[in-house]
Image (tube, rainbow, N blue to C red; front, side, top):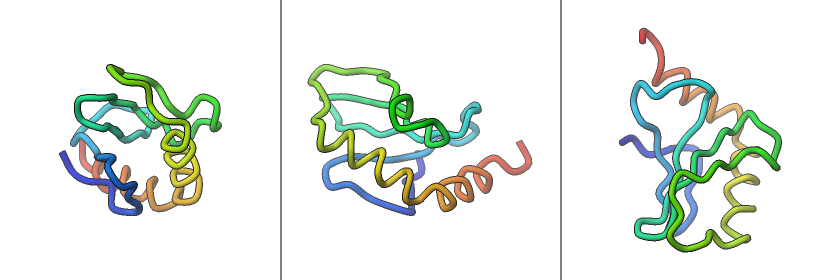
Length: 87
């Protein structure tokens, strides 16, 4: 599990899974509460997909994930491509 390098959100683990499937995405989770897949090439309304949710994600965290993914799109694509070269 490699950490997303281009941004951080306090209390949220943002990471890549090596060799993960398309479309380009990363995982965001708060252990014991929720786990989302962040499809950063999608529009904001479809960017987050719940994988597991015990406790509801706060709206401020949801907005921060989308805002930071949009603001760092080029860096996220570069990271995704580096992790998937040669697969």
